[in-house]
Image (cartoon, rainbow over all chains, first blue to last red; front, side, top):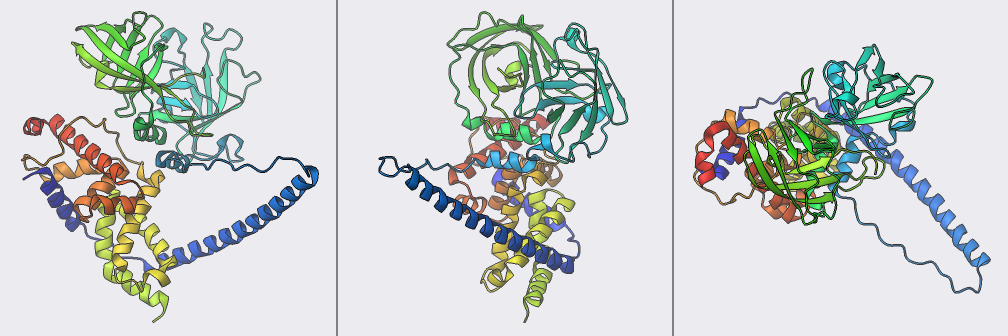
Length: 344
Length: 169
């Protein structure tokens, strides 16, 4: 039996196994009527807004002619905007719009360390990675353990201690923390001095790993929109995530890397370590490296993920194709890595 | 007959088959109920137009798919990511016969749009062009989504130790 036939058989069998619940038709009708009312309200509102726009347009054109009579200037056609890709629309639908100014910014549930554990990306217009493990150790990256520090969660107050190496003017950052309806982590600064943090007094962090995650969905669904090209230059050190698997790659300044298959647990344990010859990487896209099991060579291309204004900044991406490797698991097993970085 | 009576009769008569399709699309009983509730509320809004159609049920079945794919916020909950699409042949080949309990979870784990393509193709028996019409995308996108879904499932099968025959085919 081929896979097509098996799909048919399995789907049909699975469907037949289901015992449908009884329909609550009354609630369907009530719900449908409510939708119709909302739609009418929206249409009336849209009509009123359109009327205002038309009136404004007429006024504007009149003023333009009055103020510019006899000139050669005219109204040029604006380029037609193409419709946004489905992935961007899905991301916009999944994430709350403009959360930074929300009056309900911290009305979500209080998080636990288990809720906080993982890799987070700061919502546009900012960009930064935040890593938290299951017992509250945190950092803006994985590899630089000297930069990591501890934190204390007391109710809704999450106080992150700062390592003096990273920030010598402040020792701790107290935030009010909550998990918003779209799954993002909302932090509102409560201390007297807010320095050494990537954003202002309000930060919105979107989860990347462990999933599921709308941002990772977006990355996966836009792989084919990335314009891959040879890297004339690529800044290797940084924190990377593979949207297909949720695996994380952490590359230090000297090229040494840690490969993590999971960010679950109280501590993050790499499943593989090695060294990338980042200084020997060629502009045409060749790089080599070594791990405990031996060495490898690879070709790589770089690109940038699409931006979704107000939701997600563009991220650097690198596609690695191994020519040969003795490393298990290997960094090339995850072929596309998204760099979760700080703004350039 | 009033619109409400007509709609009530339609739902009572078609609930079972609509629920089964919703279950396959959503991948869970609760997801199916949510999806069906939303879709039928939308159906009620337009019932004066949908009701007289010759193929009202077919229309509603398509609404189920579009509602599921467009409501990504619900769709991504519970999904697990899959890898990229490897270069594997799409042609049918002899596969090891799988138990329902093995293949169905793999279908459920697909991203929402890929799962919709599989369900519409193999349960609803729609062509690629028809699926593209339902999902509001290009036929090429349907093809790539289908390939990605099948590749991911083949890879999962291989990882589960039943893929040697698949890999070799």
